[in-house]
Image 1 (spheres, helix red, strand yellow):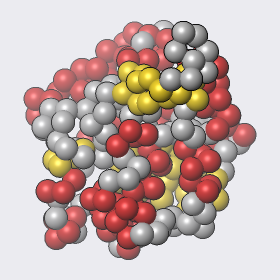
Image 2 (tube, helix red, strand yellow; image 1 turned 30 degrees about the vertical axis):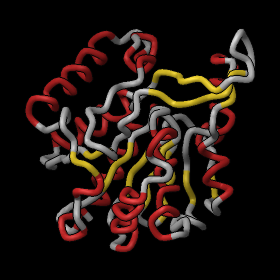
Image 3 (cartoon, helix red, strand yellow; image 1 turned 180 degrees about the horizontal axis):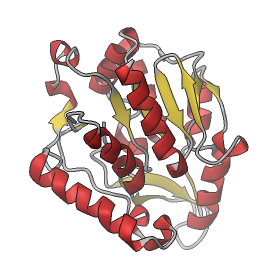
Length: 243
């Protein structure tokens, strides 16, 4: 599950635009998609990409920087090459629209995965058809994996069923503290994933307060704090699908 958006809105708190709402370029966070995707493909899983309106997802520009990979040029190249291969071989350029994936087709899927990046803040929090899709995996107790800003998509279940179906779940996401650091860098107020989920009744577990690469597992849901959780989250996701 990916966002169609190439931006998110934030309210500037400094500079010439202070007090105004502006668009910040964004998308999915490259390694949060590529690392789990690599593991899924290597294990023989068939992957289907889906977005709200079937537009080609774009990576967050910051996630493509060499700094995001701690200077590892080869890993960045590998992940970018994987995306290019997915465009040619696996429909990444023309993902399925949520509304076109009917309930009977959902029965064929083993699990659902939602990577992060700030783009989910734009169009994954109130999509009725995404809520319907997530309800399927929730009701069938089929593995549901998400990371960083990805859990914001869980709010969409309110649009489909009128209630937040993950109330009472232990969840981990990009924390308010981590977002506050981004706010300082960008000079703006940004919607908080952790606070939004807690307000709906989720029991939030702050990953950065635990350890690097921290994930939380509660019933069918595996959730990770930030890019460092991509590999352990993917490993647990596949373990649960096989089980």
